[in-house]
Length: 297
Image (tube, rainbow, N blue to C red; front, side, top):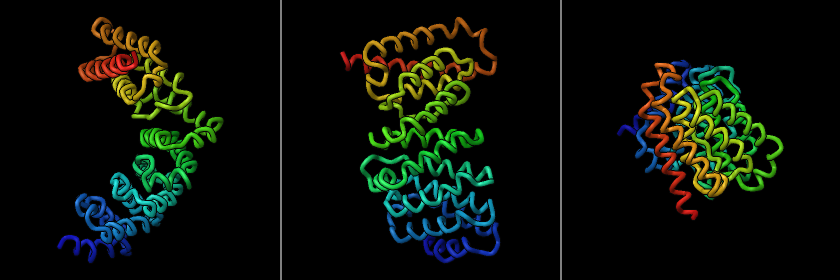
């Protein structure tokens, strides 16, 4: 019955003359339970179309609600079919550059979710064959934007690098990828570092050095926690520079972890509440590197 209510009232309300009504209707669709979207192709397509048709609404609140719903849909594998992916990819360029900050925040989130797909799936094929260069440019734009947009932009960069082919890397190595390096290293040095897939890119040595340095020496415990998490995302021994490189990294992490208590006077009082979380995450990073070293002997 509730599906009928959505179809009879919310879908038409998405085109109501009142911006508040349009926004509320889209918010209702963004809150739909996953089972409803997973098990009804027609209903899912209807909701997706209603949201896509409002992403360029004249009202910023409506645009923001539209991108919020679309970003939520994009996080569901069932929406990663070629039609939805191509339609959302076409909608994102204007949204990423929208004059309203809330629209840009949600557009960046939708972009990161859209690009978080497994290589070889229908949606991924659309991105790699048709618009991956554009998505990467949008991710860079978002990563340079307001600080509230950057984490999604950085996550989108990582997701795109994960699914990008060797041809994509070679095509962009002298341009967009170099800019991505600058952005990612800046995030390591000056801001919270989000999960980035750097396992197979050629410039990983420089980025790895920055990751380890930030994990071991940053005065900001949250930064150290995030960079330690990023280290755990690297899935091969080669990502650490081989056996010898991994050994150096493991030793540096162990030394840093063991010296936290001895240097507490060097940190601001506000960092102490993250101390236990930092120690746990650094221990996970050490165990991760050690495990890869053991497998590589």
